[in-house]
Length: 146
Picture 1 (tube, rainbow, N blue to C red):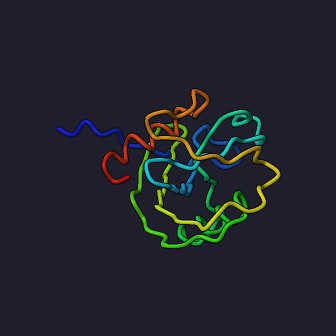
Picture 2: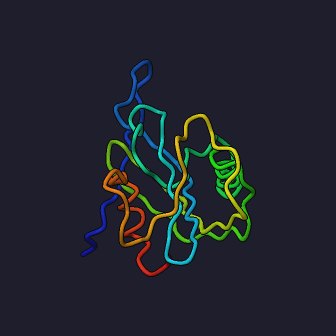
Picture 3: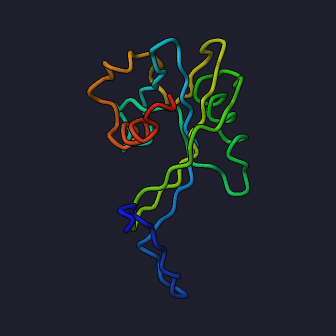
């Protein structure tokens, strides 16, 4: 018997707003030795003051690899190199997330997005207390892949 959670979406009734939401996102895991690059968000409000991986919702019709290159360019002002898919993760029930997680290299950090306060590398064993728990779940699910 599988203990894996499965997400379900109920068809939306004509004229009614569904309580169930699906988000498809792309995450960039950028490493420097034993350190991981995180960004401290200003916006949107639910992430303000939190550290997260460079990440965003994938636009409708956008390929996940194109999305992660866009995310890195927009949030870090950097060009992605050596982009490699690490994992596809799925979480939730009424709020269902499908996450494409990529290993990405960059030469350096450029001009940050207006939604990003700072970008810093953190030792994997000493991540900041303001690191969002859902991003920690993504990292933990990666296990030895990172």
